[in-house]
Image (cartoon, rainbow, N blue to C red):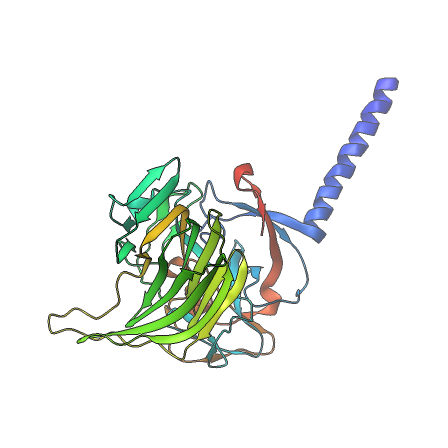
Length: 383
């Protein structure tokens, strides 16, 4: 008799649990497998080893630009994850890898899609991607000491072009195919008392942009921002774009980040964003040489300077999330979205089918918001 009672209790508990799970899936959310690479590297896609994403079900949530959304398209069996690029009523255009809204690039004050890491010395050997004088750059226990005292023009230069690469969960680099314009260079450095002059440089088309850092006698650094133009007859005179000072104590680690995105240059120091910032109208087009080459200012990224004396423990290179002009919609002409439409894109633009192919998406097609990666366990994280 007692066993019968316990069996009935266990059966009722199991039924209640099943109903709770069904209720959770019906009203709260569900878990979906990401099986395509269209959202790499934010979401790793693979038919067997892709991220399992918990999706919250909400009826027409208040969307923001660059939110991740899950869309159920008519006639498609499996929902897809994309990023919201254009909001209802806006005019959108993709050109040169950039998103234009209302005919203008996005300003730094508004939300952007995330930067995409393409190189990090915590995952990849420094010499694999940068070229430098091995006699003056010595590595010990993961820290590189740069002894450039008495030397001028000592630089570590990026060996290759910046393409739409990205890093896989293993840390390996997935090689891209298409050039990307916007990039960010980040260093962790420890200056010695007489570290000289440090320059961080980025180039785009016919322009060369750089930040020049010189330590003052009061434990601070003076930073100046410049722009130079490369022509067939040589580099033109630099144009000063701004200057600032900040704390830069010797024998302490500091993080320097120099970026160029949507025609805006920015210097961040130790997490303080925009200590130097300058927005310019357009890049100088590259000029073609008689031999068929161009004046494109290579390398795309480099750092170094004169009389350097510092330690370096991390170098990180990132690219902007880039939207290529593939497909029929918003790629050659501006597209005006309706009052109940959005324009969605995949982060891995070269391998994504999205609104460039489908056109605008009705808001009613949005079935939820990706909340977190729940499996596999080593990749579990909030989104």
